Length: 113
Length: 111
Image 1 (spheres, each protein chain N blue to C red):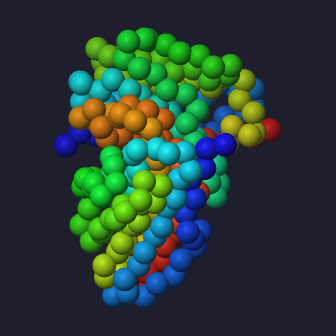
Image 2 (image 1 turned 90 degrees about the vertical axis):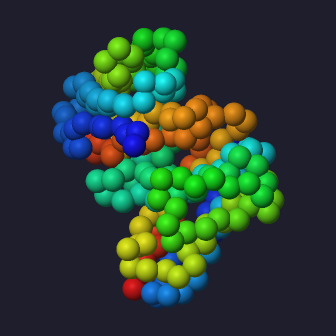
């Protein structure tokens, strides 16, 4: 069965902290994505990756970075967390070329105080 | 930039009635249009998708229609049930590699 897991369901961090959100997929998918979900704004793409050590900026990359050292793992990093980064973060993966179903993890609700 | 508009933002229907959610997209090159359902506490899950070479696709009580000329597509749910209550997102592929999502529709089905 297809599975995308995220390291935490809920996370509370303080302003200025460095935050790591981890995502692991067990489907041998090439593509991985990080989105944030906010009420009334839908899902917005932060970063994505087509292969190990590759990364592409999405629509809202400011304040974030990513790391993909292994095919199955894609990490989102908040270098210095701010209150406006309080949100739901969703990781997804998809096989091969674009235009394919994306499989989502359950999400991490991050609160920055 | 490219965007996808989705309406309505909330929709309440009686069990057994039909529900329709509409989306419009701006990138005329888009050729893949998925619909995702997100239940409380879970990530979105694909329920149906359509590619630009067809105008309609059905899967049991769910159907999606696509009008490429008008650049809009719709999700139709017939004989709604309480378990259909969720948030639904439409999306369109942009630049052949990114999905742009709509803002979501919260569907409530009352017994």
